[in-house]
Image (cartoon, rainbow, N blue to C red; front, side, top):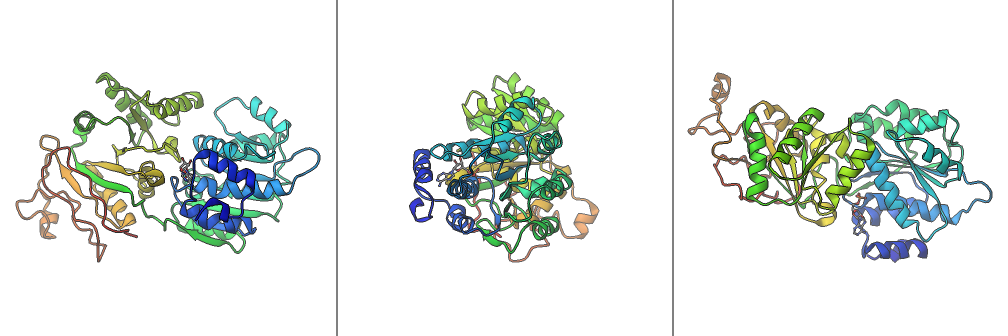
Length: 432
Ligand code: AMP
């Protein structure tokens, strides 16, 4: 299928061609006609699938067709959980809107509000915002939401994880009830389903990446490693495999800082991004990473949410996430727009429970390897022996077959001691 079959205006087709896109991605092919027809929509799509264009293009189309005379009031509102994602959506939207007369602006916290206020005073058609600063500016009467006719809740699952439910409800109460609503989420908890009922009116459902699945082009594997050896293992992999770019996830801000400093000490360029860094520092770190001025970006989950870094070859879970859904989000940073990527997880003995939670969620047993000198196998506990685990001279990796799963498709954990250039394996078929 080509873009011109989707019913988008010539101005938008020209902008899409200028981006170098030749064919719509599956989410674009499915979502754009629904949005153009005016339906509410619930879409299950991760970052990396082309989801931003799937809502920004039809919004631009619809708003261009209904030009407003007089002072511009925002007619479309796109809410995102993080500043980075807001900035990214805004950049994409601007490039798609370049041949239209529509104006858009982005609003997020952590920076001086004055330029944002000035932009609003000039009149805007589309506002992309994080909830906190939006409400802040609303309360100061710098914008009105009375003319909003299209509303997008992007990465709704993360919004809830970040505690934005109250803000979202407040924002919804400020918009006219008659509007088109689009909601995107990569995972679907009970809470998300409830929010869907509150916000969406007879939505069509678009499901390009069914709930809790991971992108197929990503190879996933892990290393059993002692907690104290994780840094050395990371440095060994970077050096031995000559990684030129990797995004490394840590659980804490402090951990991210320490790790980044240690990497720098080895003469490898690295920078950490997390919630305590100023917006300026976060933006610069990301720009330097994208320009290959920095090889290793160390990030916490919140800072890295929704980052669009094309062709990222390696994502490392230095610490396993304690929220299983974060695993899906993290590894979505690689293998984007069809490119191959490798997601590597470091699993220390205290993280076995997290590993089991993740494996249950994605319904796939992560192949695990050990590198000599980096992992000291534990003696199986009496309980484990009683359960029949820890046999066969047991170099048990502890992530053997997940008992909660039947008909499992992936390979059970490898217990071989292997060299670092061993290839990560791809699941043979989709596993949701
Ligand atoms: P998103 O999921 O919206 O973050 O998009 C992921 C990446 O895919 C971005 O870098 C987009 O520029 C790119 N992209 C979006 N649509 C297409 C398309 N139809 N063809 C190729 N790349 C695309």
